[in-house]
Length: 512
Image (cartoon, rainbow, N blue to C red; front, side, top):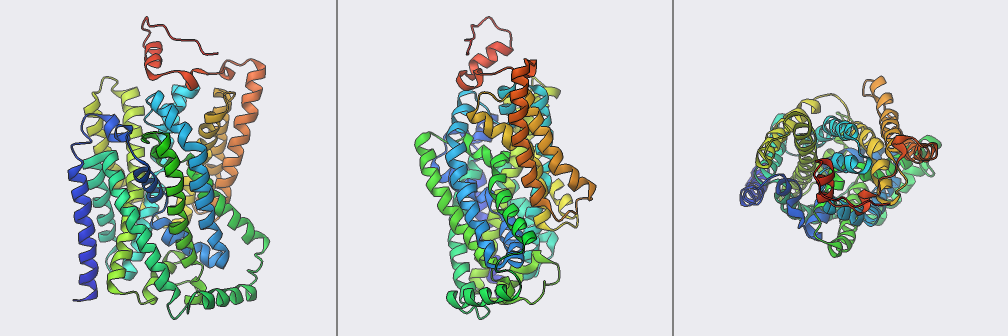
């Protein structure tokens, strides 16, 4: 049996699995937007934690970030994977999961724009965040396409259009047929595939002739780094490394598709279990991915044709992996990418349906009709992602633009609100707009070609936090209307909110 036949059989088995998951869960997604978007809020720790991890790490990380970081920083790039596990998974779950689950369940919140509206009593903020999410998740989605394109073109020698069609069909089947719970269940199995796949990949890369074993590979890389001013890193490289760690770790704290994983958790017990599971997953997958990338200089004396996006695909090709493992690696990357794309697509499209169409255009739309509209938007979003993916921008930069702009705008108003009742509408608007501008303006001025995406993303998050705090304090002490407190967000219920905003004669408690 030829190499190509074996690989295609492995991919076919994966495609059949995805179709089965979508069909089997198609009934569970019926009944409206709540089931379609948050799965009835009954997800366990394993489902939610692995879904969080698979949404976090896609072909973008394996191909774009691990390869580019390994080339730029050598063994130092392993710190990016460790940072993702400690700050992006462990700390994120400890700080955000329980409180996010509690308030979104109590207030029946299904999206980040709804959270902003209820916390800051601003329909304008809800609309602004809805538009930002839909537009600026597109580059991230497109970067997922580009990541798979490079690896499939090298390992499987297939046209990039065919590769993009595979990932589009996979994610569309899961989402359009099954919605949130189908995506979670698919993510669970895909997460298991990713863990075993990365472990096997690590073993074969380490024993490859280019690396020559763990101790020999580390020694050879250390020698190379000492000869090329990488031990220690020079000032610019060190700043770039720190920026990459911070952006890829703390940047997830403001991404709506990541925060969305906390909405459907069943109870606090599942939150505690999710902390452990998500951290282990991130340490293995991200740590392993960046560890592989850190050996790139042992395989190449110069960047291969196509740029840094082709470092990892060519490394895997040169490592002479068994045919069956090549198929598993491709399924690993496809599954990771489908999971990420599904999360991005569901978040962006459900947000448009709930917070734009239902709020501004067709207020009387029925719940089941809204779910159908979301499915249609999911298909449109996948097509738009393909169009953006054809823009000649490296994976790492395209992802950093998306993360920088969205997290720069949302991280501070969201995360601070979970803990500090003193943040108000004026502070949230200042932080949101300030963070957005800090990340967006340099990128737009450069024509989306700035090489400093991670640095601007970090700057945007810091600016947003400072503005949220300072302006909130000024607005409160100055007696501005936009500086008023909203303690209802911390103790009220969805029923009280509806009664209050529909002008019904139902008593609404005053929370001071």
